[in-house]
Image 1 (tube, rainbow, N blue to C red):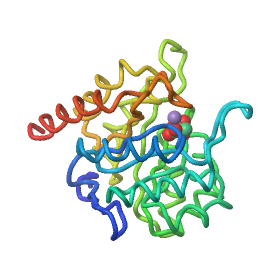
Image 2: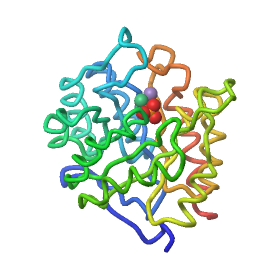
Image 3: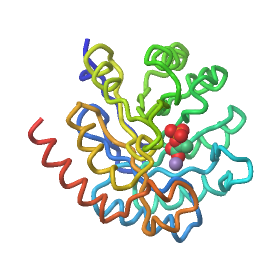
Image 4: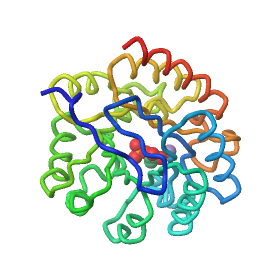
Length: 262
Ligand code: PEP
Ligand code: MN
C-alpha cells in the first residue's frame, strides 16, 4: 500500500492540531531554543504566516562538546509556554532515554536526531509512547537501515512515526549534506510511512532552502521541517542554514499554490 492512507494528528487537545497525510505539514523554528522573548516572537510570527508546528532544540546534539548544548529542561518549559500561548503544537529532540520523562509530558511530538538513529535503546523507549515521533535519517544510513530503525519504534506499538530525510554524507562538500530525494520517492511509492524533508540540514545553505523545499514537495513528501529565526545571522546554532520568517512566508505561499496542483 502507499503511504497516502496513513494519517494521524499532531498536537494535544490544548493546541490547533494538524493531520499528517491530509495536507503538507509545515514545521519551523530555530535550531536551538535561545531565550523566552526570542522564542515567543518567533512562535507568534510563525503562527501568523500559517506554519502548523513549532520546532526548537532544547537538548542539542552538537558535534563539538564545547559548543552550546541547549537550555535543556528550561528550553522545554519555554517551548511549552510559547506554543500554548499561540495554540501551536511543538516538536523537540530527545537525545537520551533518561530525558523522556522531562520532555514527553509537554511536547506534542518528539524528534530522534540523525546521530541517534542507531540508538536502539532510545528507539524502543519512544516506541512505548503515544506521541508522534519524527525519525531523522542517520547521516550515513542506507534506506533499509533507516526503515529498520522505524520498525524498532513501530514494533513497540507506537504507529505514529514520521520519517525525515535530512541529507546524507557523500563525497560532495559544497553543501553540508546531500539531500536524498530518491529516498522520499521510494518511501512514498513502496512504504506506508509519512515522510517529511529537512532542507536546512540537507543543504546547510539558506539560499538553497526554498528551492530544495519546492523540489521535496514535488517529490511527494508529506511536509517540511525548516530552520527559521527572526534574526538568522544571530542564531546560536546553524545560522548559515536558517532563513528569515519573511523568506519562510514567501516559500509557504508557493507551497500552498503547488499543493492545489498536486
Ligand atoms: C536539528 O534538527 O537541529 C538537528 C540536530 O538535526 P539532525 O539530527 O538532522 O542533524
Ligand atoms: Mn540544527
